[in-house]
Structure formats: C-alpha cells, structure tokens
Image (cartoon, rainbow, N blue to C red):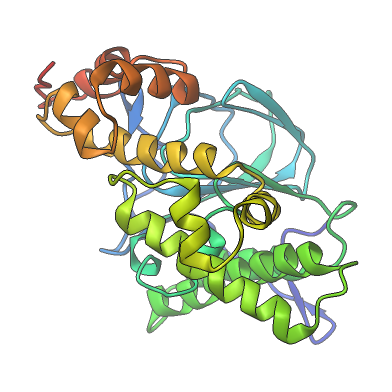
Length: 319
C-alpha cells in the first residue's frame, strides 16, 4: 500500500497528529448543502477521517479532493459511481452533486479549497475544462504525474496540521497551484502529443483558447454563437469546432450551457426570481432555461431551489 506519509531524503517523515485543537466535529450538512467550515480564518479545510461516516447527497461551492488511505471508498458523483482504492485521488468540482457512502472502517483525507483566490489568474480559464467534471487520478493510469500530486497533497496535510506554521495558507496554496499546474500541463501535453504542431504553434493554440475561455466566462450571458467565437479566435468555423472539442472535451454550445447553469446555481441562492435568473444567464425565456437546467442537474430550477436552497435555515427563495 502507498504510504500516506511522504518520504524526503530517503527518510520517512514522522506521523503527525492529524486532529485540530477544536477536536473532530464532523462535516455538517444543512439540508442538501454543506457550508464548508474553513479553519483558522483561511480558505482551506482538511479532515483526516477515521470515523465510519457517510454523507448523503449534497453539494458545496468548494472543490473537494478525496484520498483514501485504508479501505475502498465509494463516491457517487452526478449518478456516476467511483470505487476509490487506497491512494486514488478524486477531484470533485464545486457545485457538483455527490454522495459519500458510509464505509465499515478505514482512513481517508478530505481536502476542501475555496477556489476564488485563484480565479483572477490568467491561466485559470485554461484549467477550467480539465476540472469541469470529476477527475480521478490513480498510480496505474497516471504514472507521469501521480507521485508528484500525491506527495504535494500529503505536504498540504502536513502544513495544515502542524502547529506554528508561518504563512500556512500561502504555503498550502503554493502546493495546490503546483498540483493544478501539473494536471493542466499533462492535459495540454497529451492534447498536442502526436500532432505535427511546432512548440510555437501549440503555445499559440493554448493562448488563443485560454483567451477564448476567459471571454466566455465574462460574456456567457450574451448571445454568443459558434460563428462569432470562431471569428474571435481567427479560425474557420470547421477548424474552431474541431479544436474546441479537443481542448475542452465538449462542443462549444455544451460548454457554454454548462457555464450558464453554473452561474444559475449560484444565483438560485439569492432572492432573484427564476425568470430573472434565466435572463441574467443568457436564456431567452424561462422555458428554455428550465429545460437546460434539468438536463445538467436532473432538477428543474424550482426543484433545485427547494431541495438545495430552501432547506438551509434563513433562506427565503422567490419563485
């Protein structure tokens, strides 16, 4: 089994006490929503979990990374089931419905990060397609990057649980950025492998699509079309369609719809009406908005608001 504790200089690091001063009080769900209890006024929360707890269907705004240390762990994400072996690493994007099945025994780490501090980075847009869906890394399937990412996660846990660490949050985010950079580069290296592109041409494609995805993030509520986005990048419609699918593993309209639905999920936590949210997120009417929302979440906007928002104390939604 892979050791949960990183090895430096050939010597195993001593095992830390992976508990916090306030003692373990578990993860708390309010209805179907988990409000992440960030620790030490930071944007980070990590649990070293040895309790045989499961968590019913829920979501949260933070990205979650799960790493089983002992025993198999079963996670259901968007109706897809993942059976995680010890050492596997599963990334779950924010605002993604998932359920964690109660194990009989075992040991595992839960990492939760607020991604807002990273969204102002220019390269963040290029990373978003990689983490739009759950991302599973295993030692067998991801030989080129697995050991590095696993060691960075264990370094993060050591920084988090060690007492008296100065610049703790900076140090943890530096490791997280290293992890995300490694995953992003692996994605783009794989994308361009086997093509006859020069390094300069591949980088040019990367820059153009990074700029394009940033533009979509800023303008998703507008009437964007495949034709004007092809013009934006300087590609023909045919070439753009093929390259967009390669870069994002989605069609242009599928990607745009998912960005709009992500925005709508956040807006549904406010008091705005569903009709207003439809127009704010680029839909021409509430009917098309409802149809698209249900396609990606399995719920209508009103059902989603009732299940995931109304149950949270203090929320008074407007329908």
